[in-house]
Length: 118
Image (cartoon, rainbow, N blue to C red; front, side, top):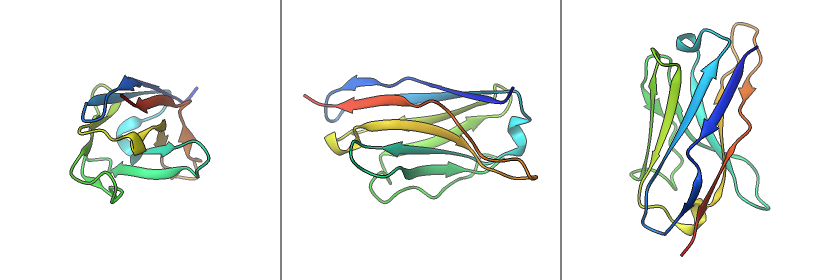
């Protein structure tokens, strides 16, 4: 059964850092682009960052450029989001997503909550 499980969320003070992790299972992870998305209270879900199968980062949201870094480890079937200099506006539920391809639909994780507050 294909599955994505996020972890690493929590409460952090403004200016702090967190590293989110997404563990993939049940599908050939190295064949799929991956991405992180987030949804703040009362707002639509938005793309944070994407990464190609080979590990090239792309599509950073303007609001996180220079502060967040997406990466992946195909051997471990993991994708990461390093978040630095966090701001209260970064408060959201963060979701990991596998892109749809090869007639296989996209796949979402259950999300992990990040709260940035003093």
